[in-house]
Image (cartoon, rainbow, N blue to C red; front, top):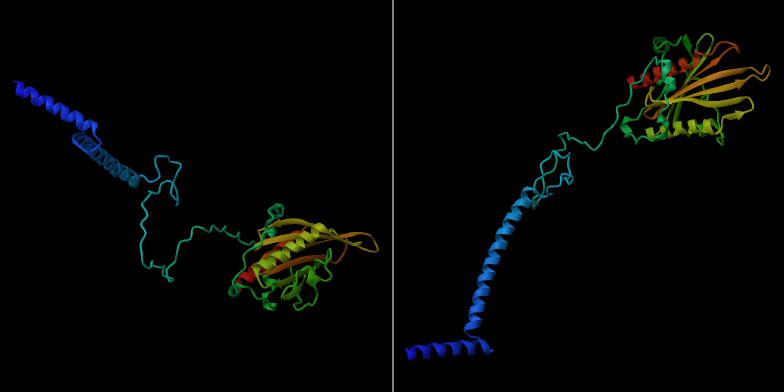
Amino acid sequence: MSDRDELRGRMRDLVRQAEQTSAPGLADVLHRRDRRQRNTVLASTLAVVAVLGSTALFLNPFGDNPSIQPLGPGTSVTSEATTTVSGPQPTADPGQPTNDTSQSGAATPPSSAGGSTSQTSQSSETATSVPPTEPADSLLTIDFGSLVTVDELQAAGVAAVESDAGDDGQPTVPPMCTASSWQEQYSGPSDFVSDTYSLGFGLLYIDLLSYPSAAEANLALVKLKEDARACPTVNEFLTVEVTAVGSAIGDEFVIFRMDSEDGDSGEILPIWVTIARTDNVLVAAAVTEDHIGRDTSGNEQITRDAAAANVEHLQAT
């Protein structure tokens, strides 16, 4: 019994001395073992958490917030993980059509050969935006064959009886503001043809002016409109105003009313002019009276119908 007690006492002294010494001993071994066990458990736990977290991230990379969505058509598209593929990527076959949803072009309103009088009240400022430049092969070219025929005018409700193609006059709207000539007022068209039609009570003038592009034709029409508003008094005998702007004829149109004062009697003679644009061509239709005093209330509609008939003629040729 005494030997056993003595052995126990020596063991206790040995443990006490090992704990008090700076040299590695049993206590350090035990501490290191416990630390390794804790680290092993912690590493295993973290590995499990990482696997679960990556699985959740793969299944729902944008979280549970429905306001965060991937780029694409909308919220109904399922989010997918993106994989980077090395090497050359396949290119689209140039012979196959592609769907391009990034461009949303509005349909151009159809032209009307006999537009109703309600179209005059249109207030959309169509002639203020510059259309894109047209390809060279889609530009319209004009010659005397581009002018509307008497039969086409009659079919549109315009009582024209004869024409005098090749009239070397000038467009009806005169130079305004700082323009020194009709060419400058009309922004220097690249080509110009005109025709004169007899109406019995007066004359119908049709002028076609072509430009290098649809954008330049648009700018020419905008200049005419803006100059008429900026300089309504052309001279002491002539005033001009814009009465309608819209898109019911060709791509866009502007209607002008010019009041011409007779130098002798002082009476006012209204002159209506409709100028429509189709692609890179301006179509101008104007009606003048042979005698002052006749009712001219229907002349505006005549110019609208005549311009629409020539626009349709151009589009058909």
